[in-house]
Structure formats: structure tokens, C-alpha cells
Amino acid sequence: MAVTTIVFNLAALAALLLLASRVFRPGARSTPGGVIHREQLSLLGRLRLFGLPGGALLIATALGWWFGPVSAVVFDLVVLGVVVFLAMPVAYTLTPQGIALGRTPQRRWTEFGGVGRQRWGVRLQGVAGGRSMTIWLSGDRDDDAFVLLLRKLVRGSYQGWVDPAASDATQPAMFADGMQRGAVGA
Image (tube, rainbow, N blue to C red):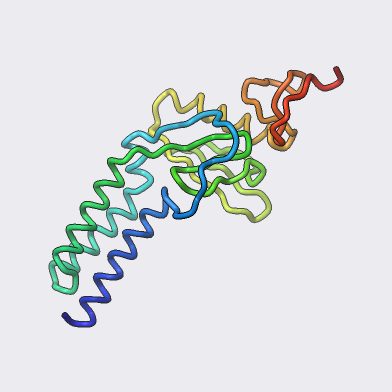
């Protein structure tokens, strides 16, 4: 086996692992705190999440297999991996502290300064040079309720309120530290 074949095979497998890291990171703990909402990604949402990088990986691996530097076994593994990623259930988990995609580390609500609705989903906009986060959605009518919930959670994190049922700061709600307190001024 030539050195170039080994390099191309390892590169294809490394790219497959990078694709998996979008929804699974070894050592990532389950989301702390109580779960407020769990939003399952539809097939269209998973296609939006994995489609472009998975398609590019498939094309590059197919070309490598066709011209020789990628073995048939690695090509089969990449095809199987991309199909599994598209078929496996993935969900966004919302807690009083933050949001997580699949088994990735949770991002805190205070990392985001706003929620922008896009044609393909939602963009949680990072604050002060922080990273933004893309929430891939299917585009159906139920997405609007999820976007409203995200807006309440991001806005409420700056006011200390994280209960999505509380419409304003005069209602009892759960604070970010997990303690239940009564109405403000009561």
C-alpha cells in the first residue's frame, strides 16, 4: 500500500470524524439542570446540518476511490457514516442554563445577544465577538413557537428570568441559579 493511499484514507476517516463532531463530542456531559424543551430535528433539518459537509466528503471520497488513492473499504465507511448521520435522531435540548445540540457541550444563554429568524432556521447571535449558533429547522409552522421560546430564553437570561411561561418580570419564575422566587416587589 502506497503512502499516498494511507494518507488519503486517513484524511477521509478524519473528515468523517469531524462530521460526527457536529452532534457528538466525547466527554461532553449531559445537559445540567431540568430540560425545558427538546426540539427534534426533522429530516430536512438534518439535511441542512449535514448536507453540505457530508456531500463534499462523499464527492471527495468518491473521486479518491475512482482515481485510486482511497480504498473501497474507506469509501464504504464514509457512505455508511453519512447515511447514518442523516438517519439518526438529533435534538436541540433547552435548559434554564443554555442550549445543546445532540451530545455537544451546552452553550449558555448569556453567550447570545439576540435571535434572528432566517429562511433555514434561527441564528442565535453571539455577544461581543462571541460565536453565533445556527439552529437548523424544517420550515414548518411549529417552528414559530420554538423561535418564540428561544427569544424568551435569551431575553430572560439577561433579566435573571429563565421560565418561558413567565411573560413578564412580575410573575414568579425560576432564576438562572435554579431557585424559585416570588413576584418582584411582593
